Length: 111
Length: 113
Image (cartoon, rainbow over all chains, first blue to last red; front, side, top):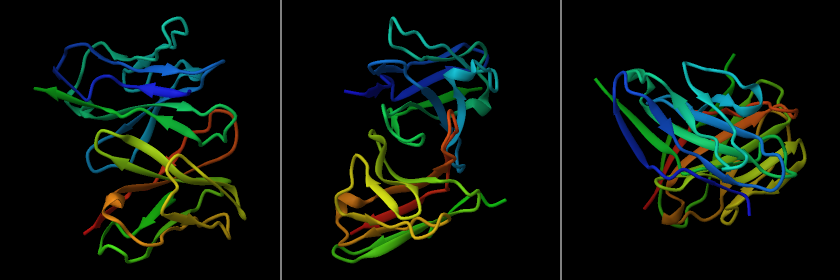
């Protein structure tokens, strides 16, 4: 079964501390993985995708097929990073928009 | 550029009532979908459409109906509202193609009493 697991409901760190939001997936084949973010009072938006191997707002995420993980990392958290983060997996054989979302992790960055 | 527009933003219904949540996009995206967001459950796909005249069920379709008569619009109908349908509903669209991101609307917060 295709599944996305985000084990932490809430992650609280202090400003300047490193951040790692965990995401594990279950999938046969080559997965397409994404991180979406929802800031307070804003719409859900794409943060980054694994295929691009990009860094957005200081965040990176590396696909580890051996551990079936796609953890989101940032070396120095900022208060404006406080938001809800969702890891998502494109459903096998599905349309581009058919994503399976994890339950989300709420990141709180304290001053 | 409006992107994905959802109306209404808030709605309260009584059990058994019906209503339609509206969604429109102006990006000429082929794909549109509806998700519901519940605490501790993440986002779950209700219905989706890959083009005008084509719709299909997602993970949690029961109690909801959709149609896609135009590329721009993808309304979600609640046939007979139930308290279990209290949720935040998001409409999303994307262009069919490798690695295209989903564009989300602002959401509709629905309460069924």
